[in-house]
Length: 132
Image: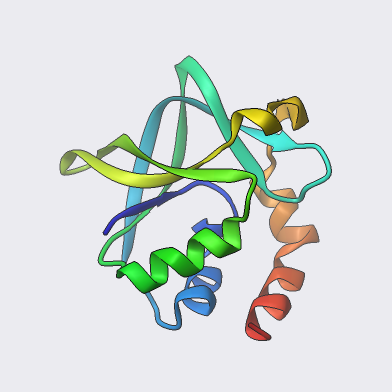
């Protein structure tokens, strides 16, 4: 199975900690969405934005058990949906975690800062996932 990631799961070391192995990835783009900050969270969401795009990572070769573990990691705020992505090899479909409609009031009116997450939160995420 394929999974498109745009936030904390873009970091290969976090994916490896969750899946128990290193995964291959390649760049991919989700068209028609924008990455936004989420109130009360260090991680982002993507929201529909017709003329925008979100750069992320496409992981391939995930098994069902790994997807279930990622579902638990993402929690009740998100639902896993199939999305179309652009890659260097052409369009592909992959799973992507999208915010459930009931949580939309938490979306902030500014973009999520990838570099700020890495500086402020990545080390804590690494420590927490090592304990899983």
